[in-house]
Every structure is written in structure tokens, then in C-alpha cells.
Length: 161
Ligand code: SME
Image (tube, rainbow, N blue to C red; front, top):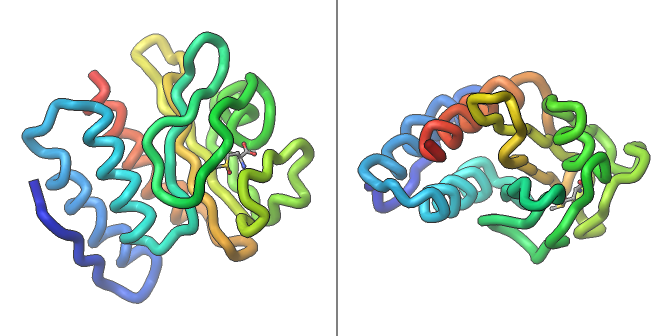
């Protein structure tokens, strides 16, 4: 695996283009899912300078906190609750420009101002986990993040199986 990250570029697109091959290299040859998720979350948080990057696993009809990088977070989220539970229920990526405007948003940190949440699916189209990325700034995430983070979801889904 790669030992360190070096993200180049000035635009968001350039940074993701630089980061994605490094994420693939990070997990190459390693089969342990938790180890790989842990490194992917670190690569996202520090590579893209996000406030928080982590996953929640679908377990016993709840979302349960998994590997993450950033401040401590709530450990369990119900179906349909918050942004994460809504993305699980609606099986879709959700971009929130201002968390204060999202009804039922769960504030793990008052510093988080915007977020993007993406579901990963198994072969039967059931949601298996949720990727949650938070920013300290308003309106950080857009279709570019969705495009590249959905590629990260594909990488995660491949290393889950
Ligand atoms: N804000 C999320 C909860 C998870 S934390 O942000 C890490 C939500 O509303 O689902």
C-alpha cells in the first residue's frame, strides 16, 4: 500500500482526480474491510481537507458509527432520521448546503455547516452503509463531489465483497 498521500491541484476536480488513484493504491492488496475503510476516511478527510469523513453501517435496523476521521460523532441513527437516515430511507445521495435548513438534521458538532451523504448498496440493492462527509463551511458540496464520491462508494462496495 501507499505510505503517504500527496494531493495536487487547485480545483476540486483536480484534487479528486489526484486523490482517487491514491485511494485505490492505499487499499490494494489488503482484504480487511475495516482497515480499508479507515484509510479511505483518512484519505478523504486529510486529502480534501474536510471537517469530518466517516461511515455508518446498517446494523439491526439502525445506522451504527464505523471508521471515521474527525471529532467524535453520534453512534446510532434511526431509519429516516437526520440526513444519514434519510439517505438510507430514500436510497439516494443527499447534498445539504446549510444543515440548519435540513429538517431533523442531527448536529454531531455545531461546527459542521454543510454535508453530503451517500449510500452504498449490496447486490440486492439494500443499503449496507452510509458515507457522510461534513464541512465547516456552508454549501461546500455540489455535483462534482457527488460524481467523485460516488466513485469512492464503488471502491468501497468492491472491497466489501
Ligand atoms: N449530521 C448527520 C449525523 C452524522 S454527523 O454529521 C457525523 C445527520 O444529520 O444524519
